[in-house]
Image 1 (cartoon, rainbow, N blue to C red):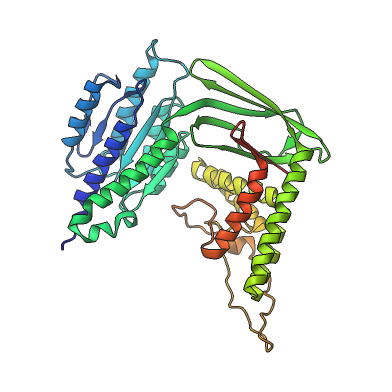
Image 2 (cartoon, rainbow, N blue to C red; image 1 turned 30 degrees about the vertical axis):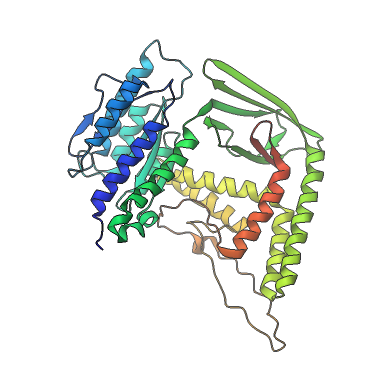
Length: 428
């Protein structure tokens, strides 16, 4: 047995990822490949090419010839790719409503050319100029994931991480290299499934004037097949029977408008029914276990169930605040987003990079029962953390607790899902 050279493994994984993307291209797509290490190398220097058997064959040859030779010129690669895509979009034969994007895949930090993250991000914004999106993928642990995440968020994309732990077991044996590469290929295939089929672009969700407030994100750059759009907000009139919703978006050369009147009273009745059923299921599980801890969990989840939609709004608003923090251009703007996300995290009891969780060992009373756990609410200044982490999502719990919460969420969420539009409206 011997250990696989990590650089060799990452090269194999990167190549397999490129083959995955190449395999999933559609006949109407146009594409190009750029390698970036010590030098920038463009497969087709004259621009993007259509998906044809000949071009796919030549692209495979280009991928086969890629070898790791040190250095990572992230800034140069983004500038080169953006220039090619801008030239393609400026062609009068290119559809105005086509969805254009850069899939940026790397296994290293910037070491060649511009290496300062702030400068790379500024150069990227200038190069993209809101004309297309950048989706970033990092492979391994020697990657600046914060840079990749900000690059994606600032340019209407998203970031995916393929950590070293994903294939750590496969790296223990030489014969397991194929398994490690296959695992990365599967992860990349799932990611590409999310973004490989754009259905709508420039999606806007509008409501009757003054009918809702505190609405989360309602403008979306793209909607891909298999994804979903979730919007949460507060009804201005709590006794309203319906809510008029209008969704507009572009599809190829058409502008599509979808309108519906959401039956609020009926949805409220259905939601309450599912909340009661889910709460009863949790209560039954707590009684079966018979511990004070589980009974306390029953009480806590019952409280969450009562205000489930409001908690969804809080969760989405926290995520929005954390992302806005990453995109902040000034310290004042950044502090405002931090304070807002921290306050919401404490109000709705979400563990985030800005809050702490205090865990106390339960006290067993003389009769064998558990003493009631004290309620601890950390002050905002104690909860705030100056350090930034790579994981900008509100944290999730593990084990049985996560399973019960997930089950509860699924049951209530099903009552709110509008299948005809694949868009979820959460209102409280």
